[in-house]
Image (tube, rainbow over all chains, first blue to last red):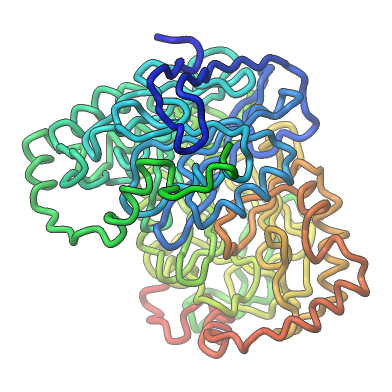
Length: 292
Length: 292
């Protein structure tokens, strides 16, 4: 397990203006307190998490903003930004005085175009992040066990394939200075009372079942479940709640697989546009000079 | 200032099956800890706030669920429930093992039908709450300074007219066992970077300006602003943020009034249905036997 964000020796993003061997290691230290705690789950600790959940109505996508508000630079990460709401997200980041350092995707989305490439074109220092297993291109290709630091806080990378072959769940760190309760950004692997479909992009219901049970349901029960989508207006759940009430994942594996095989969902409207775009941070034809 | 939820001597809700002199006083004590902290802003204290934000997509309404998770009965309140999402809200309350005791409105809404009456028809012990100044009917008519207890936690009632003549803001209590930071449920008085319109239902831009500046902007700057609506996908703000960045309420009173006079907004689609219904908890023709 790496203690820093992993080195990314094989990323080839020259078409986006990035060098072939990009070092994503990042350590930022500092423990000064800020006056306002804003929206936080931490308490009584040196580091303080600033947390915002943001919603994109058309695709019902949740984007998450996290920052170490105790750090002088207030380093921040965005998880699953959407191209259509990049202006909103960057305006908020500016208002809050944060320094965005990473724009992460939990997976190659099929229902919206990621905002990571657009963000990089507007804030060149930001590094895009996706799992190596996704086969997507990004500045940093993360693997299970990697830890993505922003200030003194970090996200742990857990492999949760099944919705797509490269899905990961980002979990806030385990440690005395990390937020309590922990927070799991589950993408489409685990939704509130449901889960993502498994019938495209290398999806597998058997794999998804194993992913959720081995990588998410093993977290402390009070861990907050923060999904990439909700279609009923829920905003958050907990691991304990989903272990008890998830309509699909509380079943045995065989029943779960049958449920997933019989969803009869329509072909995703956006998939033919979104997936090719999202394999390259949402920008299929970027202006290289704008994204350096 | 009353320390309990105010007595309601003049409510006349016989058509809903309520007695004329309804005592809404409620004290529930208890400080036992629950294992899971769920979604909370409290820490290191005897009482723990369980908090959920819920979204109704059509009217972009936020409903808030708060409970004292440290209390054996887990008494809960719902702020601004919507009729269309009552089933969802009650299912969540059941899943979380909460006892819903109050269903509150910040004001007589014009854009959706409140769920308070429907909730009462399904959970008869629940008391509906609205401000006396609204002229609406409810089990409990609250006034500025009243404190609405659920377990050891309470909401303070602040008068914030201007969007309508009866708007109130519910603010989590000030005290050692109350959540930190505080949370202000501002209804339509203060929205994130904006505010509610002031051109109907006894609205007044002069009054709204005074309400926000005297009743909300005087709260600690880290107080969370939890509005009844957001149309851009924001979920929360802070008093400090709105004092600095609110597009309307950072202006002087004269400029603010001019902005509000020149919004040229269309006549609200739902107002002719919603307002008469919301004057009586959303149920204009209830079945008395079902709501006792």
